[in-house]
Image (cartoon, rainbow, N blue to C red; front, top):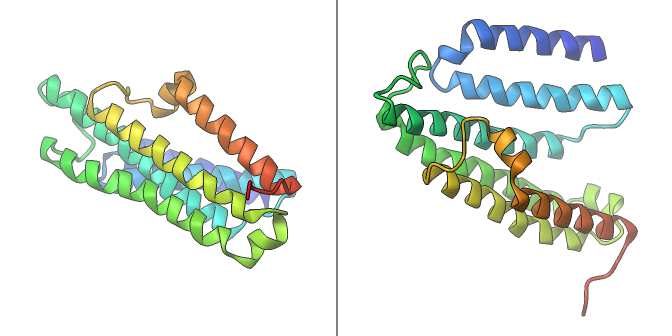
Length: 191
């Protein structure tokens, strides 16, 4: 199964590099698929079950990040006479649509998290699943902040690189990890 996932990733990555990155909106779908294939391959390699909840959340989360990448390229390209987004299929006027669909995709990932919190799977996996509600505001804050910074021209086209240098990202990730730990071991919220 890992070989199938690996070959799928190679095929999708090659198709993206040769053709798909030039096709309007299909490029961001392909980027999202590549991230999701990595998650599936990681699950196969480690022998861990990758739930449909995780895949759904990841789909919308990574779609938001892929759209953010294109949005930043459009913003930078507009300042360079359109050079930065040549060959991508996007026009400068598409920035407003990307700025709408991108955060909405990120918020859909939070919506799926909320649905998951109330599922039987979460109740069976976590001692205190109600603590997971704390992750929703953290993700909403992080997604909104990232899009606001992109709109201001602070985020570069490499969103992952920006996030890896961003102190706020580390704080949000640390708080999320703490909440996951507390929910797993069963620390009860204050009453």
